[in-house]
Amino acid sequence: MIEPIFETFFHPSSYGYRPNRSCQHAIAKAELFLKRFNFTYVVDMDLSKCFDSLDHVLIIQGVHRNISDGRILSLIKASLTVGVITDGAFEDIAIGSLQGGVISLLLANIYLDEFDQKMKAQGIRIVRYADDILTLPEMIMRRIDISN
Picture 1 (cartoon, rainbow, N blue to C red):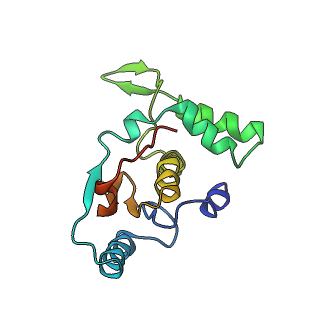
Picture 2: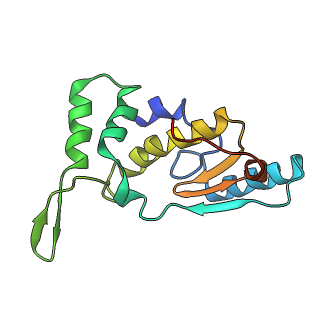
């Protein structure tokens, strides 16, 4: 139910786990950038253990930018801290999102959208499919500040 709220705000070059978008669309966008801007190189990044390292506070802040209903925020917080059973023992989850959870893909996109938007604000062309990111070579020639 909340996915359509975020869809209108997500970066246009984000393709992973979104309605009516696919890996093939991401590849086509990268090819378009390469041809239109005559780029020869790309920088390929894969975020290691992306789902395991998502910061709960930042996720909730990202959700809260577009949703203020406390019941929904509480439900999302609960889904983030549900815990897991490993080798027969229960473990709390303090960071990360269960990969394969009903809402985990949307939460990862909400989390990563901040990166996407910072790249866009700096004029850096990217193509992202989930935790795989292509950045195009103009970024190699100048310093990028994503800390803000």
